[in-house]
Length: 338
Image (cartoon, rainbow, N blue to C red):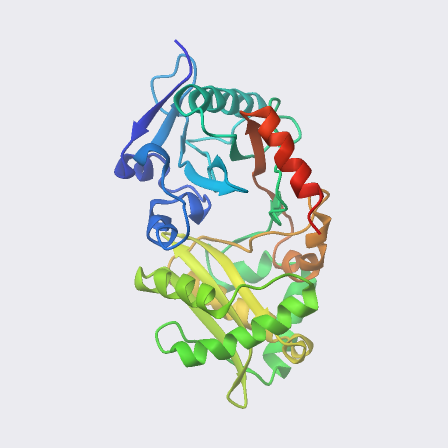
């Protein structure tokens, strides 16, 4: 029996991977936000279930969305595939990537390549690294928030507990949740803090409309939680969680240099973790630390790695090339961009 993909309903897709800590971008809940962005239509209108050779039940599910780069069409499984059950082996990922390439090649000859995430990106044959600088990562920090506050603290590194204790004693900022109280004018003040952060860390921040749309879309779904640090009434730092069932990500955070010196980011994250813990969240992903895969992210490590004793390997993007000549042209263009 060949390896196959078959359409799957949103309900069955969510049921098959219920309880798994997978990226929000691969979730059904992400669809409403994706609909607000350019492109991103689900390929052929349906998510897919993957059945390996001889299987009678899906081993993975995947959401392919349509994108273009330099007018070249490609499919992107953002945050996927999501595997059902145990983590995949490199051999399983290789087989899925090959089967996916064969499927798209046979049914949609316009596509130049397929982008998907794999855990064993060094070992999955038949794929190449992503052709764009995606600021991607293969390592993160996942905080176990089960149990009590004492359990949470016990799982932190010593320097993490020390920094939180110091911030609780000395930080002049007041940390509060503002998920339901902040308006657009107040949110624009937070974006000024993001601008300072991006200039300090050397990345390009999105504009205010982008962050506001992201926040309000998920706030309206009951999934966004916004915590703000204020000193004398003015925002000095903030952080936004996105929560899906008992899994959350610390999706966006920003701070002034003043806030960093006084420990406000530590206090903000810690207070957020306690609030989520009280609401039954069992794991919080801090979304990316640096590694050999992307050392440009190493600046994140000192802050993020103190919250747990270990890092977690996660899937990273690779591509299955369907149109080699067009793909080479794309890479030629990318290599010459300033």
